[in-house]
Image 1 (spheres, rainbow, N blue to C red):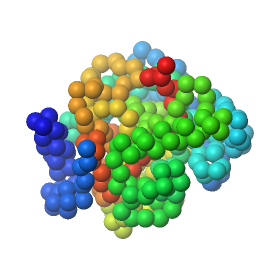
Image 2 (image 1 turned 180 degrees about the horizontal axis):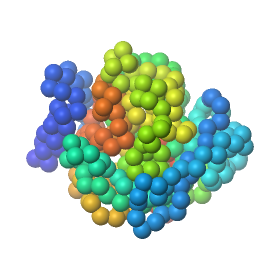
Image 3 (image 1 turned 45 degrees about the vertical axis):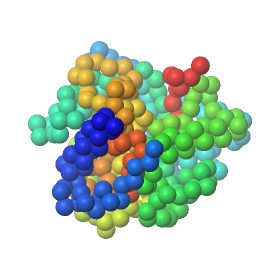
Image 4 (image 1 turned 135 degrees about the horizontal axis):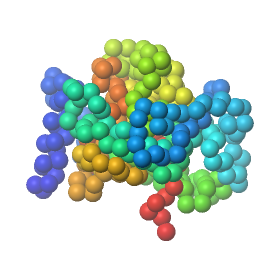
Length: 318
């Protein structure tokens, strides 16, 4: 119980910093603790290097029609290519392996975004183009916990365990359909996978990308509500709403960055806290960044946190 109490204290401190004290009371009241469009380019990166300067993993865009095949039953996705599951209206973008500096170098960044940590992803993976929609979530779970409901809105107000359960159901379904590569599963992206993709394979977002207003739903333009996912421009090639709209749960544990070279980092298992990334419709635009981290208890849920799925190699599988 002491451990859980400490986690809740840390969670409240984090909420206070991210949302402001005036929002705390309303937020905690809503928190419950319980036990397709045109083809998008593939995001590719160079092979991991011993260091990660600004261009170590610069993505190479290849917007080819063949990269957006709709997979029929019994067909496996091709590595290094995007694919589309028509029956789920679900597009997945290939992210090549690479190295980058995880965290923020800004002097005023929160302490949980420091120190900069050289992070290597040893395998490529696929990441969903959009946040998980309510219609897809309800299709596989027969539930919709969202506070603001709409088929094309991102699902929210669910726990980390709910998101994990959805990924397991999707894995089982796609395995039965014969569309799952050997030893690959659907799960939440790790923090490293999520941040690498959100930065476009760089150490930071490129300065010549779309403006915040063009690609991010935030407190200043959302009308204080979650929005249909995919309406705004892609933040980085192929990925929409990865910043803003709803925070996105990540696989693994919330933990301080180690400040040393890590490979396929998932945090340490000494805490039960999980983490969501990217900011939301409730946050100012300045907080909707690739480095912002929002710790949550494993059974905590809130109306501005959802998730995005990844198709990844199952390192824990037999």
